[in-house]
Image (cartoon, rainbow, N blue to C red; front, side, top):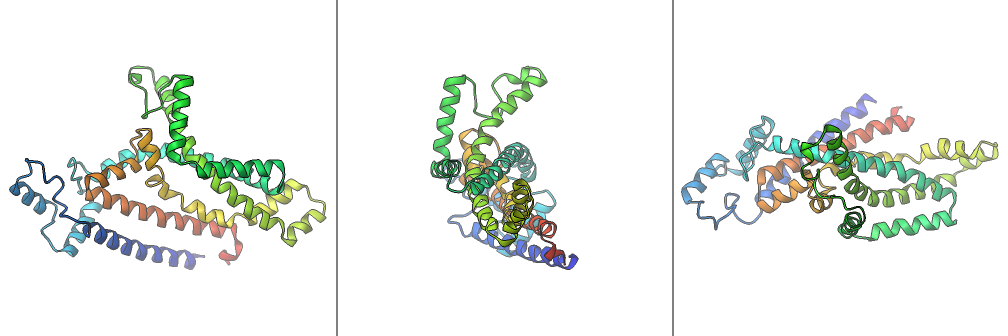
Length: 319
């Protein structure tokens, strides 16, 4: 087990190094000089541009720029070109804003996907299965931004409450309980929207995997022994159907950054996805590279968690 885990950590460390190199090269292959952020701004005199190039090491060879950038990143000295604020501090603030959306959306997705998918598999081709199949394909087909605008119009029109941003205007003067309830209310709609597509897709995976497992000999043997249907499906069949979802569970961590760009933009939620989008538009390369590096770390960390969960779910890996 330890050798398996050790090989996994070494492989992921090497992968992270190559990802950092490739992402750095791709950013610097973009057209134009990084210092040409706003060439039409009259305040950007040649002297200022040259000073900026020296300050951010843009006058050095590319490999030296790579080493200096990651040195500054790991020591916390990297600053944004847009507002000259520390990049890690900005990302941490946005991370705290995105975390509630990510946690609530993930909990909703995994809480509803498994019961819906398992029941659809058990009642294959029945009215429930057909209804859930239609609803799943409908949610998959509707664009997220369109669905978001429809829900915003309905909620604002019928309930007459604000849903944009993280809090209502003037709520900071209210009591702490009112502020918490207002934050929860603003969290409900974007979290629900973030979960709808995931529930539709994941429930289809659960259904297909359960259908495959239910047809196995050992499941028919368990039913023939007279075991209760709940024990057959939820104890014997479900555990053996979990392996593909262990992999999917490890890959949800990158959703902290890239999975909520549209939702955060529509609801004006100051999260990491919106920050990445704004950094790309502003050509804020330190923020882009840092977010890309963090995304790679989250992907590799997620796969490492999947490896650990594999050892818990499948005894053959431990052996």
